[in-house]
Length: 128
Image (cartoon, rainbow, N blue to C red; front, side, top):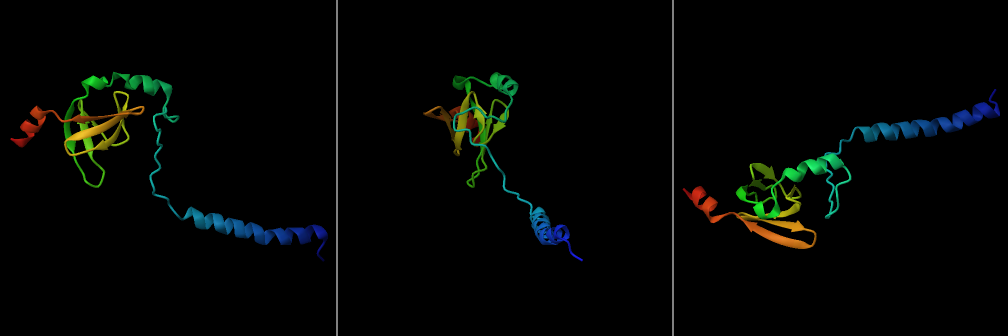
């Protein structure tokens, strides 16, 4: 014989199975979309303060010399600066790289935008 207590159990049981089924079906999906934090000039909250101090060894803004650019029209270009590779969104010398063009990069420090070109000597050496 069903008592009120048992009756409640059987009413809740289908809901539990439904929720478990939904959780199992969602766990089969893998979300491959890359999630990136856009700092918009603010400090990255996921970066430790010690890491921010460690990056101070980067070249000063006036010392940014582009050694080369691997240009990709699909937006996956790479700029070679002081022996390191940088992409759009990376920060070098406290400036965020906004765009990488075929022969220059556009960087921002706060609201100020600067375009830094590959030196003519580097372009001449690459033409040989």
